[in-house]
Amino acid sequence: MSESSDLVTDNVSLISGVAQRYASALLELAEEANAVSDVERDLDAFEGYLNESADLVRLVNSPAFSVEEQLDALTALLDKVKITGLAANFVKLVARNRRLFVLPDMIKAFGLLLAEKRGEETAEITSAAALSDDQVTALKEALSASSGKSVKISAKVDPALIGGLVVKIGSRMIDTSLRTKLNSLKFAMKEVG
Image (cartoon, rainbow, N blue to C red; front, side):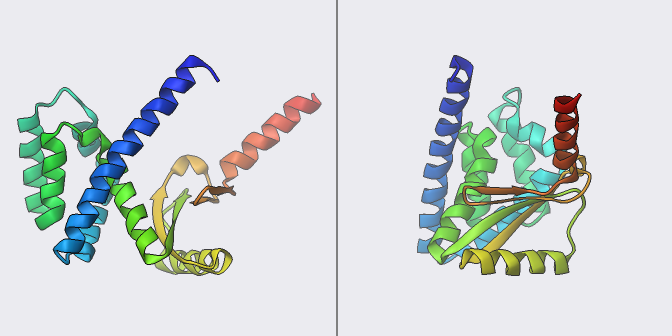
């Protein structure tokens, strides 16, 4: 492995460790306050806003903004979308600690910890277009049947896939995207020619 890939691995481990610690502490607080479902709902909503807003992603990832600027913007957003309580306090704490760039990983870690406690698995589904409720339900049933566990779906859209799905569940990944099939075909044609 090269030195640069070692550095990337170290950074992923660092982020994962920070995310894990924050998420674990939040879950413990949420359980003590009997507010796990509220925190889960609010973090899912915040993650949705993150996935939809390039400006919010820029605010979260850019070190150019001061803590005060980030807190002011986040407080306004949280108030506007009615995210309150532990989840709002958590997001503000992360901002005060200058760890906003890790917030998406913290939200993901919280979901994974919660799923583990519930005996669920989380499947990350990426599709070229938004899935209908019926499609999400069918995927959830099929994945639950194959894994033997209850499956929670985390869906996102990537038009670059052209068609098909990429499903990540645990350490397994199934890529049926048209983009991957076209790339495989292109590679095979280069090998022949």
